[in-house]
View (cartoon, rainbow, N blue to C red):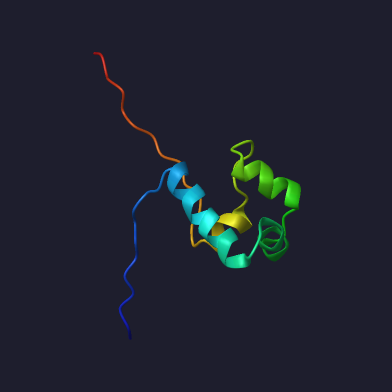
Length: 77
């Protein structure tokens, strides 16, 4: 049985955009990337212009999934 190391780091949207840009570059164009992940070219452009959040398929392509987290801002008693 092999050991698999899991990366539990959390990434911000700037990291996600950089990773998506690399994937788009590897695909040759945003159109080719969009076609490859099953989203419209318009949607891919909207994501890269920070008008829409990336889809599950776009995140999956770069090896990510969306998670939600919360942080304590202060507690009064």
